[in-house]
Amino acid sequence: MSEEYDVEFVEREEREARFLVRGISPGFANGIRRAMVADVPTMAIDTVRFIENSSVMFDEQLALRLGLVPLTTPPEGEFGEDDTVTLSIDVEGPATAYSGDLVSEDDLVQPADENVPIIELKEDQRLEAEADAVLDRGKDHAKHQGGVAIGYRHLQRVEVVGDLPEFEEQESRIVRGVIEDDGELVPTSEFDHDLSNRYPGKEVEVEDVPNAFVFHVETDGSLDVEELVTRAADSIESRATELEEAVQL
Amino acid sequence: MELRVTERTDDELSIEIAGEDHTFMNVLKGTLLEHEDVSAATYDVNPEQSGGQTEPILTIKTEDDVDPIDALEEAAGDVRDKAVSFREAFEAAA
Image (cartoon, rainbow over all chains, first blue to last red; front, side):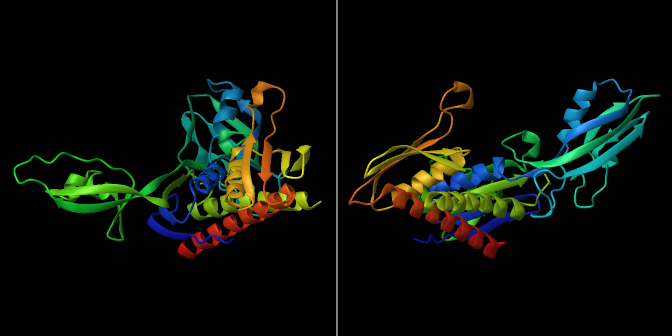
């Protein structure tokens, strides 16, 4: 039994995308979504050695903040579960320590954003620390979560069924996601999510298209959208293979 | 992934699949139900804090003298095929 899926991008950027998948069952769509959130490993700081912390916050608080800084995750196979990458930070006040001040020993593991504030330092305050980043999954800690806003909705088919009575005030009809109008995919943001803007004076019917889901995927920058989706599919594939082999024994 | 059979008859199987959660179990269950010789498939998993049995237990019931183990093996293969064809379809569009 081989399923035929059909994927089509609606919106696409490096960190955020919307794509339609046809022929996918709700259960499998949810499996993919969950795998993106919790099962795709990303790099994050896990251990911090403070050399000097004369800031107003405790070491533990800064360690948490450092952990939450998204780091770019190297291509698959470059890193194992136990490998670590060391980053260091050295900022002297008066200044604000930003994620961009982290210096990594590895070009593949860098802060995904330069402008995440870590702490504001006043005169004579200083932060100097060394941190080890490891690869782990969102299931174990949210800082390892590559996908930050992931969900899916049914594709909705809109059909014009007639005209509204001439003197009747049209009520607004809000839909969110992506609609299919005569085979054309239109994000609802194009008409302010209100069907009465797109079809003035018309009576329309909206129905969910069975087994057609529009995924919205946003990453924290540690991976791009394509990497995240393919790695999520890979993680389900590898578990299925593992189970198949375990059953054969 | 450690498997432990907890109950087994000719047409029924309960098996513990250690280390898995809803992500994989629900997909597997859904795929088992698409299998034509599987009459019932379900899984049960308790939250971590509940104590006792916390690993998911999959129960399969088959008809027409099909060994549930074989059905499970085929379903695992089907899940793999789904994941592969999903990735291929995605990569083709990307």
